Amino acid sequence: MSQTGSTMDTAENKTDSQLLADYINGSEEAFREIVGRYKDPLYAFLRRLLNQPNIVDEVFQETFLQLYQSRETFDMERPLRPWLFTIAANKARDALRRQQRAGTTSIGTMGDTEELSIEDVVSTLKSYQITPYEDAARAETAARVRQVIEKMPANLKEILLLAYFEQFSYKQMAAILSIPIGTVKSRLHTAIVHFTKKWKAMNGGNNL
Image 1 (cartoon, helix red, strand yellow):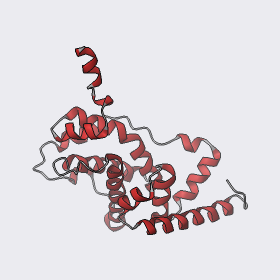
Image 2 (cartoon, rainbow, N blue to C red; image 1 turned 90 degrees about the vertical axis):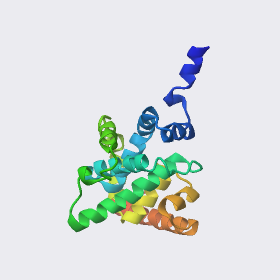
Image 3 (cartoon, rainbow, N blue to C red; image 1 turned 135 degrees about the vertical axis):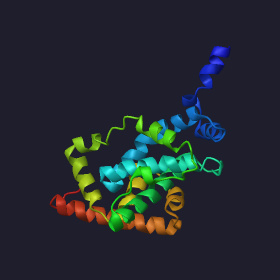
């Protein structure tokens, strides 16, 4: 009986809400499970959005550092996945702005010096063998799709990725991007039109 209970109580069998509750209460195992659960989709999203490996790694780590630093103020009513993508999208914009001004900043310059466990968190993140998002590039058509998306304006690329790759709803995208739902719809429409025109130009007028 106790054996079954022990199996059911393992971190990988818990919901996001249960993991967050454990994490807020100080569970390192819960934090590691959250990272393990979301590292691949977040990393893939950032690779598509930024297309610059050095910035991708930085923003990826900053996203989970933000989660770590927000453990005591996190609103348990909010779903974890959209919140993580909100952080990632915001950190990506910040990184691009920093790069335009003075180049990217090192992960070592981040964080409050009073946060004694920051180094432990960074070590946890670096312990994962993160594989770059490669499978889409293996197919010729998918590679062309990615090529078009990479050259899109940042705001259009961002919303296209959130809608079609990450499958977020209008409401979730509005929260992630801090814009009204009406703006989400119009921006997504603009992104689709932009993509379609560029795709046809690249492929001699042919559709997908």
